[in-house]
Image (tube, rainbow, N blue to C red; front, side):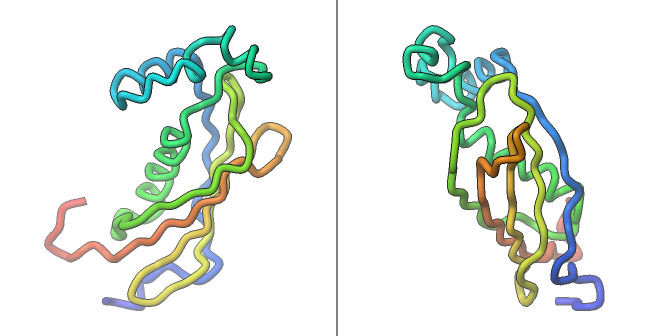
Length: 137
């Protein structure tokens, strides 16, 4: 592995803001097979004590990948894990960010998602490995 072009400890990935609407949740449910009604039915979400349907956890996790790929296309996401601290509701803006916490034969990113109140809603870690020179991005 070439270390001269490796990410630096503490380096940040560009943050990005997203907002998932009800149509996004319905589309995700259709392609993922996760059609749990709590994500799709506003009345059911309200009966569960939520102001709106919660965004699927895996949809939130998937939102980190484009930010990582845009940051360093020469590194490949190998593993992504997350802890969900509070629900993100449909229509709520979420900011995704991250920074390098370990560099070696792999890169470890600490990733965060914040809601509009600046509360951390997701803490995640991503393990990346360097893309081989002959592999297409």
